[in-house]
Length: 584
Image (cartoon, rainbow, N blue to C red):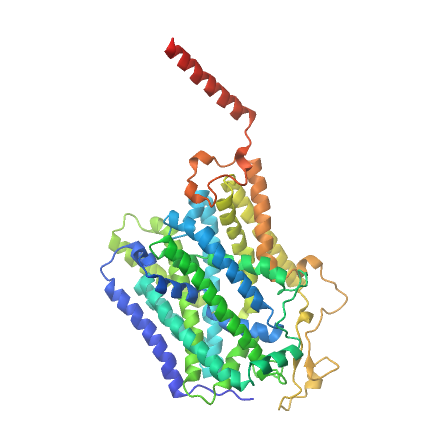
């Protein structure tokens, strides 16, 4: 099995994609050269049309990591994630327009983490902002690194050069053009993604023998598309993990991930914001399900000869790029289109992440680093800060080799770090009694619980034996498979169970899909308990716009101490006495 490298026309198509993205950034940099407005730079003055905003929301919700990782996951584990994606995104498309978007718009936020300061205090905001910035920089670095694997496999260009070329382009147009450059690049890159997706299925489906053949081959290989009703917290993709775990994990990005939530705040009216949120989630779900099916197409293509096992590729992350190179080898230009598709999904998310992290960082550090700056100085500082953050992300991307499975890493750490933040947002919106002390303690305790679970899972890893087998019985290779595999059937590879007599504690076998659920529940329990034991928030001092319900539904603070009751009675008696004296 040989990899066909890209032809000259493929490089031209891919290079043209980068050039157009860069030109869009230059255009909006020139157009806004006299602007000194932070609202313009970070939110495009909130007057972006709903079509562009929806395209931007779609592009931000469909990063290059999932375009590579979801097909690979379907290849190695089966397509169990497909109904999780559908259910989670449908629930998101309902939750976001009803709960989060109206509150953000009523408060006229650009940085959604300002909500935590308005609802609780600065301590809660600073804590959550720091965690969100650190996590998002890691996430964006992964998002830049993973498509570079595709470039390395398909074109032969090294991963490091891919990061420099593509990541550098993204950083420059994001820094100089601001939000308008990001949004209109997202529109262009969305069109590239859709065009590449159509080409992939039009050419790819006949190559693998049609849809019916894909279903037959994958079903025979224990990669069924049937919904798994098993209630087992160790299994990642079941109906129950979808209804709870995948949904909450998705909200950590779409509801409280600044790089996504910012898309709902660049339109003028709340109705447009609701449409933006719903359309972005539903369209991204459609694309994700299609690429999960692409993973089944890949398995059908390699059904009798797994490239990873025989050493054609070194990492699971390189499987889908290899598949693209194989099926498009007889179609000049299409390899370039698919590379452009992968990198368009990466660029759109990375540019959103860089812009959002610059906003959050400037909100907290700008007033300390600049003393009485002019509007022009502020904008120059923001652009330099944006570029600095972008290059830091690129630096982290060079460490991508040390990252294990993409989906597990992203889901696990979003659950550990962002799950508690999501829980505090939800608690703040639904409970008037929760206070800042409860929120801080809840986030801290739940994060520590999540880290403890991750450490335990590192020492007692989940057994991979639930993965369906891979086969090499049809390989045209000189490798003696039966000598390198510990199995009775040399044509089948099944992951090895845990060695020795060590039985991992069951608590550490919890699937990473449930980590967000775990940290959310711990945060809620601890925050409510601590808020109840300490002084609750005073309702009269809080803006009703901060809450989903205008009336109390979790009445933590309805209790009154004897002292409070005595003071109220004394006040009433004093008022009555004054009225009587006035009457006399």
